[in-house]
Image (cartoon, rainbow, N blue to C red; front, side):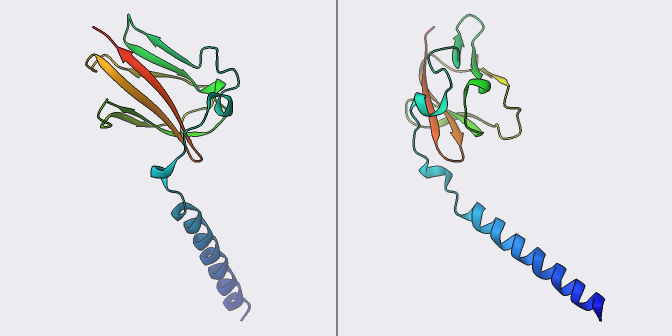
Length: 128
């Protein structure tokens, strides 16, 4: 009899936890993220948070100077099409992310660092 109540309690606990976590995930809409201002995401926004190495065609992003947890990165061309994307949620917070841009054609690109609460946008201008 006691095992019957234990099983029922365990099932109810599991069901409640699953329902609550599903509600949290379902309410997240990644397409409606608001852009964050540099003062809202960077500890020292005027320093080396973003750095473009034009010679080696690598774009560096210092996660340690960004005080939000990032979920993914997208690079968009001038038409708004995604040309590169990557998941960031599993990287350490002290990472210096290296975005290889050697395969991109010259032009203007927008880099979106997406978090669970907003989005950080930065522009890259690539010349020949």
